[in-house]
Amino acid sequence: MRNRFIFILLIFTQLATTQNPYPQDYFRSPLDVTLVLSGTFAELRSNHFHSGLDIKTQQREGLKVFAAAKGYVSRIKISHWGYGKALYITHPNGYTTVYAHLKKFSPKIEAYVKKIQYEKETFEIELFPTVVELLIDTDEIIAFSGNTGGSSAPHLHFEIRDKSERPINPMLFGIDIKDTKRPTILGVYAYPIDEKSHVNQTNKKTKLRLIPQTNGNYTVENIKAFGKIGFGIITYDRQDLAANKNGVSNIQTFFNGNKNFEIDFKRFSFNETKHLNRLIDYAHFKNNKSRIQKLFVQPNNPLSLYKSVDENGYINVEDSTASIYKVRIKDFKGNDTWLTIPIAGENSNNITYKKDEITDHYVYADQVTNLKEQNVSVYFPSNTFYDDFFIDFRVNNDTLTLHRPTVSAQKYFTISYDISNYTEADKDKLFIARLVGYYKNYLAYTSTTKKGNLLSARSKILDTYVLGVDTEDPEIKPVNFKEGKWLSKYRYLKVKVKDEISGIKNYRATVNGKWILMEYDAKKNLLTHDFNDNVITDTKNNLKIIVTDNVGNSSTFETIFFRK
Image (cartoon, rainbow, N blue to C red; front, side, top):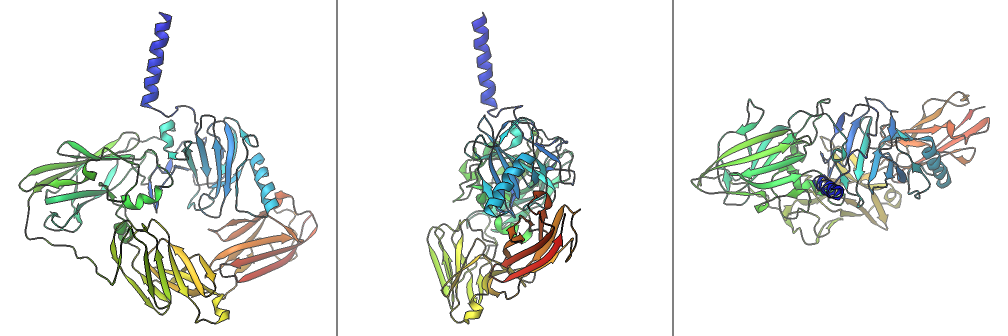
């Protein structure tokens, strides 16, 4: 009897594991506050899916960040942008948790990092401690929340990754967020796919009039369609405690009762995240700043998020038929919203067709393309783009018109300028820049290399490029001190640094000839030294800061201050 009971228990345990493969109650919340999100997992971002949860920190920095479970610090990365200060902890169960945009680390981790920063004389650093160097206990404070890197407001970015470094929705592990609200639909679009198909007598992408229902679902005005059709939606979800418009968790579609498409935002890999641009209507996003999620799978789309896809999500509408297309949108908690699209099949001979732009140059997506005019050349590797298209390529003096930013690139391409006609003095100050701003009157530095008389830059953005020139030195200004001041009671030494044209490339700070760590906040153009590093021990101190921009212009700031 006892053996039978154990056997039955094992069967139930196995079934439970099969239904939910992710361990529950293993990871605790990384913060001791009610979890409120500003960003959800796999949310649509610029050129990538969001790889974790963005947890609000009550609009402030310095909240205690706890290890989600015991383990060891396997990676530490500090960068000016991106994740800023980030910590990675690998756990005995094989998963890794990630904590990003941190203000600072716990004392033992901070000491470990600063020791190596001073040894290597660098602020930006990436470290991979051994298994025994930084062991972490359950509930241990590992850091304090902040706003470093590319963060636009104080919050904690939290991830859980599997052994293959694939991010997984932390909510699958029991990280709970209160959410009783259904997703919202903002827009619906129909896409005639080939020359024979049409919707409401047009072969162009068509916006459908959305009609909210009293029960919280949606429908649209009856449409007339024929041929191969795809649909797209603009949608978002809100949790109970925040007003943020966050991403949804799952989208399914049904044609006449049969499922023909599903996308499930549970897990993805970093090498596929750039292909978000194949999921969305990229041109619509660049023109309108809103993301239509296409409910069909086009060629050259390698995303692993799709499942249960029939005929790539397209439907075929025949003449003289009546059909129903439905969309079900769910958040993680299972709150769902339905969209119903009634379709009357009607072939028509009176169709408005979209006009294709024809230029002198054509790009075959699966082939290498070289374009050259005057002193400018552009090299596109094979599979830079998803589709074949006519490209607008023109050169006028040093201005390169390279189509428009409405076509997404999945690989970097190379822009090259022959600068042999410039003087030697000017050559060292030139760089390749993209024209940005409403009036295209601002130079955005594109990382430029010089080899002989050739300037080259790699980019993923089709746009207008020019040769920029930067002859101005960077600016260096003290913030909280002046020449000869006593700073004995000060915790921090702060200096503003700025370069208006090509931007800052590097900096170096010394006191009495000895390198000191100055943390760089690129968003605030601020360098900060913490006197608690205890490397400044003299009474009279000569501070020297050298800042260099991206074309090599350099400025030096020197001053004397006192401490005891």
